[in-house]
Image (tube, rainbow, N blue to C red; front, side, top):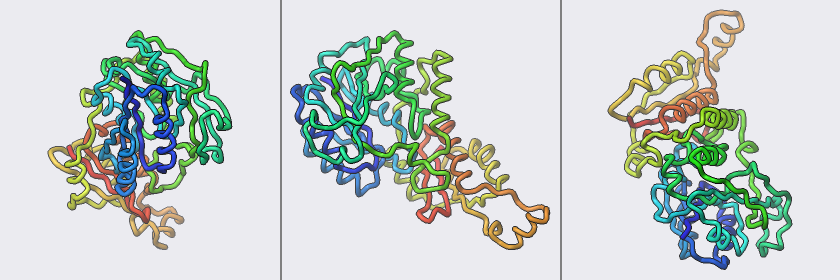
Length: 358
């Protein structure tokens, strides 16, 4: 049997239904689905759970990562350590599958091989339609560089401690896992003899990324950072990259403890204050919960500050909240992502709360 893995957060239910309905039509039903909700907002998560319950081949699992940036590697690694099948397929809630898809998976199972598949992308208009697979109009096809939709032997993933958990937000984790498994001796095959998957349109991370602070957690130029890390792993012939804590996530009890923690320190956005926090207070804190709220200093908006700055007098140097956001998130993904933590931007975009348990 093969486990089909879905990783998900805060996407509309219609695309999930189209994807799961296409699995319901498979000629070969020797599969199961593990649907991993990586911290959707609670109201939506309840609706998704109810939807998944309509499919007897699918199991829903909620992870308490609502106040952490998206990390597909962590979601997949959790699944890899959980499932009991010998093979898994890395799916996507945007995929519509050909009725023969799982039969092809079954035919191509090999404990020493990865097989990944060509995908047909649909336009925004076409993605709203409910059609038979062969009736959709395809906008373009992927080539060998699109490595995301892959059938894996589970033990090989466990042997290398899973997907690289440095890769946050978007990009590179799928190509990286191919590179590292190839170093382990796995054969890699690109399947394009018959189109078996269609991708429903949506805005990608690059299209959503802004230069200003917003409620969606974002880190400026993280796609480029992930690309550099992918190159680093390849050039240094990395095979195992994660710690012994790979696939471990914040527990429900830690999530509740962090969400309800009341004792916080207010830090104004003076650059020296922020730098001291990141390079002194944060790394040296231990044995408890550290909670801080970053805000803009009121003095920065005063006429007195503007006059003194314009006349060359000494005034504090400030970071914007967007700059603080990027600096804190970069520290988190680099050094602290294995700890239970909480990161939330206020709805009015005037403060950022960060809590970590060490």
